[in-house]
Image 1 (cartoon, rainbow, N blue to C red):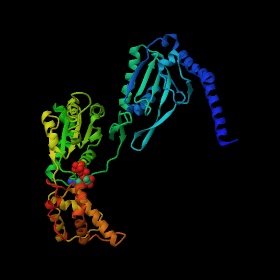
Image 2: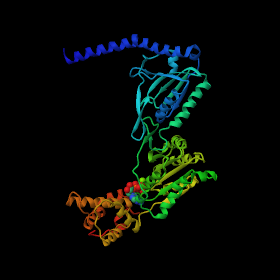
Image 3: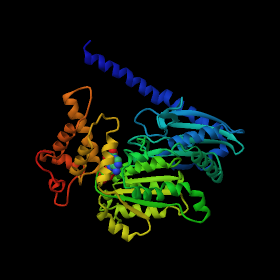
Length: 476
Ligand SMILES: Nc1ncnc2c1ncn2[C@@H]1O[C@H](COP(=O)(O)OP(=O)(O)OP(=O)(O)O)[C@@H](O)[C@H]1O
Ligand SMILES: [Mg+2]
């Protein structure tokens, strides 16, 4: 028998089994599911409306924890079944099971589970679709849970059948309360993005630990930032008692590579016990949903990086406001008594100015993060040569500091890395990084061929000629 004959035969066998499943066993099983639900509810329950609640997909894991808690409460018996339909059939709803008509070949199975993140490096197995037969002091009723399915079903849904509407709503409200109570996102650092279907998605993130000493900024600047962030959090109770609001917006602005992102990491690290929501440029249109989430998980820090990216973008629909206005409105719309810190960064404060002027009061404080002065450059050299066997005489340090006038903090970090590489090309493993290595690295970084590198490190002047401002001379 040829290979294709063999394949055709296998296909015929599989197809016959499938038809058998659909026409015979399939519908018998479907009626089994229908009668199971019917018997549990009784004629009275079958006549009642199905009440459905749609939830955002990221609530899936919270709903699972809520259900687990809720099902094992005393006085309640709950039996969980899986309901499976063959591939390529649309998912079924609870109403279809009550009617028992036009059903695809549905059958009972072990409940399918999806393993979802429930914390940094942790997961929890969650019901992907389930039928729960419940008996408690409300009577007999049925819940049906359906998780989001990529490219098919964007939302998570929970249905209640067999109860009067008010009772069904009360069940959903109990689960809402438990979802909030068990919320796995509270107190964590979360990166916000969108799912394939454009819904808000949350991912646990871990930020590198950034200590105060790692942030090289003028002391007054750092103190000012701390006053509006960490200090407000520390005095949260006294401020509240004195009727003062805790919601605050802080904008860090300045050239690229000067440490705006770095500073937000330090601040976030100090805000212990807060939920941190990280949002950048292109996901900023999610801000409406984010503000609600921030309130729910408070105290919350919402980090909005590179807000200038949306300064000129418009929202959807005719006459829609720029996304930046939506962002500012969402900041304002958040309840005044909520403990929320909005931390914004930009390197284009000029683009933001008109919007900030048109929507005053959203950003309380704007702090400029400038290029490092001589003192800061000296500290940065020390900071980034921690753990590096760097041997520089005071005169060498002074020279590097002088020659790097106008560069960013990121540049100095890169300078040390290049100097280490210079040394390694001579001797590996690393023994010593000398003034000559630093010199070679600096001339390489400042050479015209490295122009794009300097742009990447954020060193350009107004007319786009970095060399002029850097005072580059031959030989360095
Ligand atoms: N003030 C600083 N003190 C210590 N390290 C810094 C400082 N500024 C920058 N760095 C170092 O340079 C890296 C890049 O800086 P960062 O990403 O914070 O710049 P930025 O101001 O956010 O730039 P952009 O406007 O491009 O987003 C940081 O991860 C950090 O290692
Ligand atoms: Mg940044």
